[in-house]
Length: 349
Image 1 (cartoon, rainbow, N blue to C red):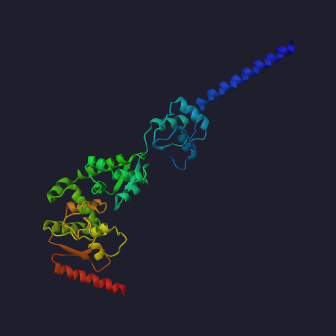
Image 2: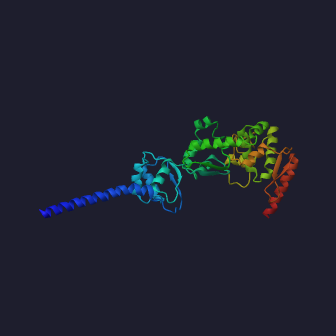
Image 3: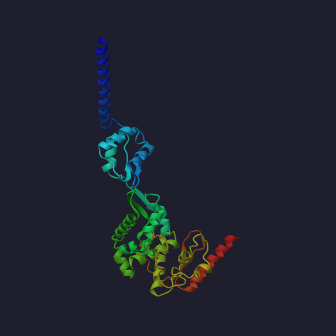
């Protein structure tokens, strides 16, 4: 009888001990997740990107892989309690602070502000290049961006076409969210484009020239490809505006290069200037259907604030400056051109 009672007491004690340990474990989970640091004190990269459409398991895997979660069990348990787990998790780019608790980490991923990215656009020539460049900074890949750039109905709704869309992209650094989708990216660029034109009386200056904003950008794209020297951009803009004014062909070398897509050429030849394309201003009068490149702010402002002169011609100077010699008459232009050709021949020998 005594042995039976002893065994019974041991069983009760074991049960109570197991219950106590189990209770302590479940009590420890919220304590640990709420009050004790879970994120390491040192992070190689404090930013985490949660893709659009990611599942909860995807998020856990990403957090573990990047070293933000060390105790997966506690993180999963606390995420369930905090109702963070969803069929489709919140996407975005978030900055994680070293030493956060799991509660702080989950709270931030669930409702905290996203960390924006800086999208840098330079002087890309084609929308394909813009798509490739932008995809380096945001979640959308170049294929999905290009699909939006070529969506005729979408572009029409925004007041653009495939030919004129490039006018919405002004080289600059733009802040946006990493999970910005392709159409939102286009709308962001259009918004930034409008902000640019709202400054410095740019719209009024375009009207005074008798040009639309898109036409100003198109001409600025030609100026952009004619010279890298900002100091002479207003002079070159004045040449082309003078030609437009007298209904003279622009005969801009960069347009014939764009028409042929022979961007690697070092010399414009008859092949380029005789290539039949609406972009080739040796073949057709007026501006091309759209830009031949992104146009920088200095080039845009050069067109809006052109130098007033009587020049109709220009060619490269016979030196290393990369600038141009200007002329009012074709005869004077021929003299300048011959000087440059002589310089080139001498350099070859």
